[in-house]
Structure formats: C-alpha cells, structure tokens
Picture (tube, rainbow, N blue to C red):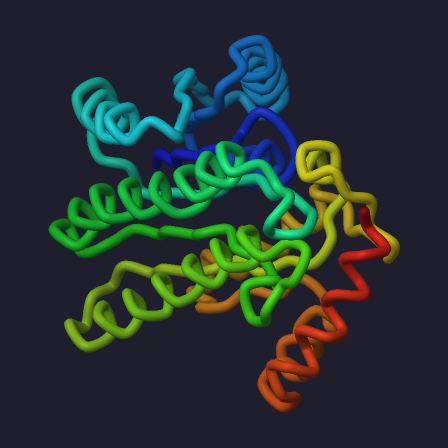
Length: 255
C-alpha cells in the first residue's frame, strides 16, 4: 500500500506519515525543504522498515502540482492514500497584511489541494478504493477577523470535501474522503503566521494518531478533541456576527 503526504517535513504532516508507516504503508512525502525531508525519510525507514520516497515541490506552482501527480503515477503507480496537509496562515488586519503572502497562501491551502485531490481522486474512483484526507481547521467553520484569508481558505477545504463526499455517496463509491479539523496544534504554524496561541496546544503526534484512525474508519469530519467538536456545535447555533466578534478578540491576543 502506498500513501502520499504533502507538507510532510514537519508537524502534522510528518506525524501522519509516521502513523501510516506504523500501518506498513510505503510513503511518498512532499515538501519544499530537502534537508528536512531527508531526515523524515531516514527516521521513518529506520524505525518502521517501510520504503519512503520524497519529492521537493513548491505547491504554490500549479504546474508543479500537476507534474507531481504525473511523476508519482509514472514512477510508483496509483496511490492508496492522499493526505493534503500542506498549508500555512498569516495574521493581522486585512488592509495591512502582505498581499503576496496571502496569494501564496491561497495557492497552497486551496489551489494545490484542489488539483491534487481532483487528479488522484479520479484514479481512486476508477479502481473504487482509496482514502483522501484534507487538512482544514476548526477555523473553517466560522468568520475569522484578523486571520480572514486563512479562515476563508479552510472554509473552502471543508466545503469542497463535503461536496465530494456527497457525490461519492450518490455514486456508491467505496472511496473515502475525510476532512481533518483540529484546533491549535504545537507546530511551526505559529512562526509562519506571526501568531502566538493563548490556549492549550495539542501535540501534532496526538492529532496524527486520531486523524489516521478515524480516516481509515471512514469518518467524514474529524475532530481530535471534544472541545473542538463543541466549538463546531457553537458555530452552528450562534449567529455569525457573534462568532466574528469573539474571533476578533481571540485573534487580537495572538498578534
């Protein structure tokens, strides 16, 4: 069995790769930094005795995403699991945040995920088996003032995944598509996004363990902790204006 994980050089992506390796999946890991990928490859191969290949890809490049799919198919054949994990955020007032960084975020969090999901899903549907897990966030269920672009990208990921889930169900497909919606996780996200969380952070290894277990059981929306699932419930009950008000003050404390 073969799994591909994007954003696998650190954090949730790295730890999801390890969880899959525990289950004896061979791996294709993807990120921008070769040195980090080499270390992840060596660590996983040594500990879990599976085969790990890596590709250095900047997923903001749409053509590179398509080439990744083509290269993987040519060199390794069809995959069994796709983990769309690559992504990052930024924080600040919308009129003051860096436009270029936000465009890169949209290309990474949305466009690359969309391309890879579509291409690999077509193959999975053809053979009528496989798993895809898109990594979103609890942020995707609510407005996010002071992190407006990031919250919006994660909303896209959730809605896209839910839409495809329904299409697959109507076609009676055996392909399983999940969306992972964690809360704050102890990763490199904070440094990239220029934020500091003022609430407990979950270990990325704990998130990965729950995520892989629930994905393989076919869970559609994956929450890793009760209070995160409860936040989702609140977002359905309370008005968007109130959620936006609360989020504003939560985000302001992060900056």
